Amino acid sequence: MKRWKRVILYMVVIVTALLLPGCGKQNKNEIYTDTIAKLDDDELFALVETDARYPVLLVTSQYYEDGQGNQASITCDVYYVVNEEVQKTGIIESMGTAYPISYDKSGIYGASGHEVWRYVLDEADGSLKLAEGVYETFDENGDATYTQEIEGNIENITEEDYLAVVEKHGKAQVVNFLWGATGD
Image (cartoon, rainbow, N blue to C red):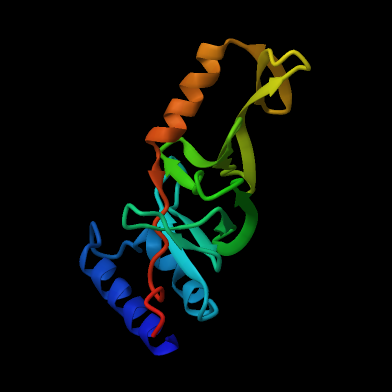
């Protein structure tokens, strides 16, 4: 399997080198080449585009076929460029295979049946930060309360506000972890 990972890695590097936007510019994905090469045989990775300066490298060893053609995961390590070096900056987890890690331009999502979390990369220090969390809780009578967390501040929101974030998460792209998943 390690041989296939190397072959695919070399192919990725060659293809990205051919797609460089201009002479003398380094492709943003190339910065992860050494990190990807050092992954264990059972680890898969994905490079996802958010609004961060660089693509975000996600790595997992716990993955499953989601029925839509994706090697999805509910947990992954997050790597990002800090002072021109790749560093592990955090972990994202979801609470069950019905809520695979997903992303869009605004961030990377984890979720459960009654919560959605959107994470972003802080460009200043490369750290992974919770940008927004929405929560549905129930009291002893079964009445729902909806809250939103932004920058550590929690406030009550409407059900419609909660559902808008849930819908945004639902439209996000499931992370498809690739390369090395063939079991060779």
